[in-house]
Image 1 (cartoon, rainbow, N blue to C red):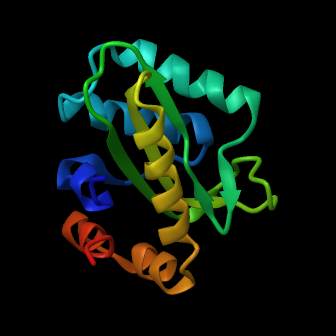
Image 2 (image 1 turned 45 degrees about the vertical axis):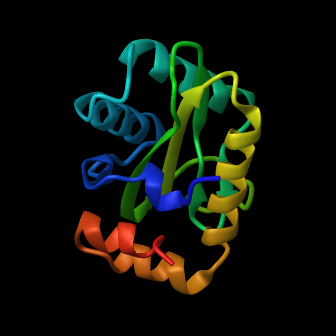
Image 3 (image 1 turned 90 degrees about the horizontal axis):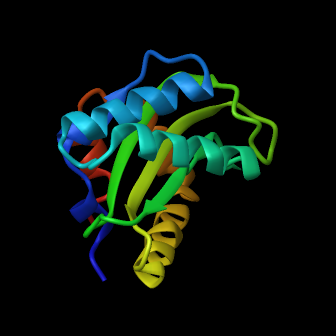
Length: 148
């Protein structure tokens, strides 16, 4: 199993200007497209938005982990969006979301997918790490917080 930082890259991290959930997702999907991670930007965005309609990916603690798996992808990837003011997300705890981890990848690697979600959730339960992420000023600082 790969480490979380192996899915990260400085060009996949954004200090978001968005103030709504959908705008934040649009911004992160555009970031992934610019990083050449997406085969079809519109299809990926549609899948992410459809997943949000089923149940919010806001897991509480100011964190959301939107995700989509589609055919045609070989590897998983993660885009990180940070928005210090917080975005209304319909999160499980009712609070705004400041840390967004958009996960995408192949639809046929369920075990790896679940491992990524589990590692992200575990890493983000650490209050000190969440505070440090929000205090980060560069993409490199963000990645360093996932490098053990």
